[in-house]
Amino acid sequence: MTDDIHETPSSTPNFQSELAAQLADLIPEAIADGKVDVTKLQELLSTDAADPTERFGLFWPGKKRALRAAQEPTTATLRPDFENSKDWDTTKNVFIEGDNLEVLKILQKHYHNKVKLIYIDPPYNTGKDFVYPDNFKEGLDTYLEWTRQVNEEGKKVSTNADTEGRYHSNWLNMMYPRLKLARNLLTDDGVIIVSIDENEDANLRLLMDTVFGASNFVGEFVWQHSIQPKGYTNTVSLHHNILLAYRRSEAFELHALERTAEHNVNYRNPDNDPRGPWRAGDVRNALYRPNLRYPLETPSGKTIQPPENGWRWSRETMAAKIESGEIVFDEAETKITRKIYLDTVEGRAVESIWFGKEVGVTRDAARELKALFDGVLPFDTPKPVGLIERMMQVAGVGNGDIVLDFFSGSATTGHAVMASNAKDGGARRHIQVQLPEPTGENSAAYKAGLATLADVARRRLVLAGNEIKNEVTAQTVDTGFRAFTLVDTNFAKWRAMSDVDATALEQHLLDLRESSSADDATADDLLTEILLKQGYALTERISPIGIEGLDLRAVLDVDGDVAVLAYLNEHVKPSVDQLRAIVDTMPTKLVILEDAFQGDDELKTNLVQLAKSKNVELWTA
Image 1 (cartoon, helix red, strand yellow):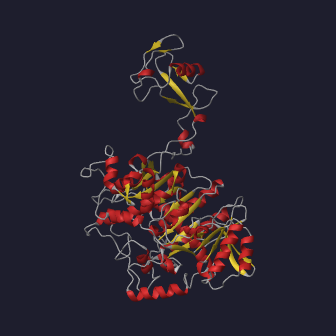
Image 2: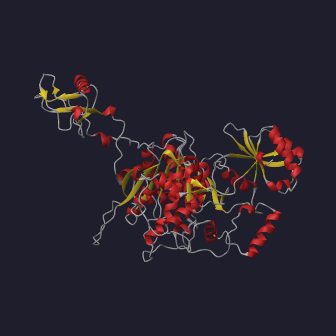
């Protein structure tokens, strides 16, 4: 019977086990007694394996532990926060309050290979940034304790002072597992862009090489964040941040930027060419091509010897371009000009310096935020909307593409996605993740009723969305978002058992006898967790439905038909007739709580047979 019932997994994937399984399939001789035989693997890769004593790469104290933090499964889940959401039933956007390491693990199941652009603006490690709760250890327990979801003793915000012995190592240990998990979420043609300053830019470059591969480096962009002159202080006045871009694979394409009148000033038409304005281009090859070194004959029959590296095109192509007038000569036929016509130029190259006059500076970002919050600046270091819009342009983010920001801050990324959709009628989607970092009782945000950065971000999304809705009337723009909060699993049987003393363990086992789900968990809480662990999106269409007196939840497909039915009430045992009525609705999948059977194995067996008769996939939780 167990073959006919699928059990919902209790945690996120175990990446170590999955990697070992992939190796077993690819290189079965490297697996012995169910374990990877590292020595055998080195033998098989002898010519490609590096000498372990002379490896090139970035190494720091705690690197192995940081990798384990990324690989460690979590039983954590997300709880829907209807009160802090906007347009829950229709939106495709998501905001998540919680520790981004745990959230990234939760997103792996559905969002693997589905995110087109990831942008993050992590702590720059200046010695003042928030890095971790005190006494940090990777995992859900510390987060729950720090946010007072477990006990009344909260954790204070700490700093990573440069007086500590492992100043850079602490920062790398924070970034490494998050980047490892983030890479999994990118589409094959996706890209990640990370903001950083001079404190960690060198280490971040090496870390990104480690995670994404040096061959996938796209570029290093310099963003001019300030244009305000500063007085002399005997130090370098910094007016820029670095943006490091890495692709997932060679499938990524760097998209050209739009041209403006300013970029077209060099195009003229001094000879009244009917094909329109043009600018002069080169006919010489930039690299040495011996097969393109041939004498060129002019219209009057003169011969011009080739340049050192050769011509840009073959003999036949050059002749055709001379015939069409695309390549012209001066009166003496000694100077050759190639005409590059304005109407053939589709865009302009992405340049390495992003000037503030084009994408905005920090002051612009502050003005944008203060305008939304009635003159209050609730966040000290926002990014301008135009900067994120530029990133989406060069990444080629289009309709239906997802943009993820798991260091959301004040939610500039979400704001930029909505603004871009308003401009071109697009349907880009965003996912924001933000730790509920306290704003501080003396801050402008706290005095405005925003106790955490997550509060600031949610409020900004609402205010920016309302402003965009008021400005755009001719089209429908998704300015909503579904809000979720990171919590421990709603199922008592899935709770972590480590670090539990004997008394607590005894009580835990007693609790399991009575119920498998938490007392305060609603049907929506349970359904969200089950769907996440089965690989569904956070924006599935869900509707309550009643069948023969039972309350269920239905997940609808794109056509509005029922794809999943879930019965999540362990306190009301269904009858065979009620189960038959449920199965007769012909859902693709039926999910039922194990405790709903209340120990009645005969009822469970009957449901298995009913589901088989209608070809309904049966799952328990």
